[in-house]
Image (cartoon, helix red, strand yellow):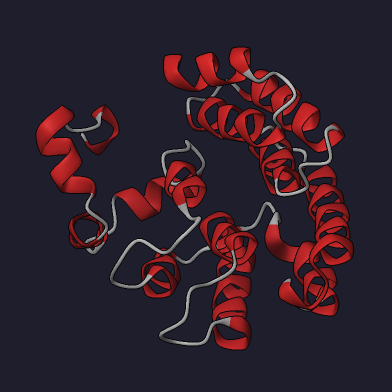
Length: 199
């Protein structure tokens, strides 16, 4: 946290730093601050923060608002990235269930996303990877993340430390430690200490 806060203080108009700070605060359960930081990043036109902005609403139990934010974010990213972003029609279908209060609904969506959009052997888009974190099931997350750290998914790895039910299920899943070893996470923990949330 101190390093991320220092990065924000040195570049206060850098939306990416604000998004990372929002993600860390969200993982730590500081929901109101996470919401504020994610909104600031969105206001600075860092549209990838829209997913974090949606996730903060979800964590506060504001399910409909979370869906609205995710939909708006997908529209911004479609305008910004064009064909490089996932199909906007798919995202409009996803938002109805991505932040449903019902776990089974979210898990069914996660499986649907994986089957429809994920091509084995390729790296998922960052919004797709994070949608899988939020919706589940945990097994789908491990499958799409593959056997090596994909580029640009550090934010996705930050997301798994949150306190929502699905994040906890990822960390407590039997496959998690094998996944952490593949990603190089266990090597870092052996050097710097294991996370408290693994206990």
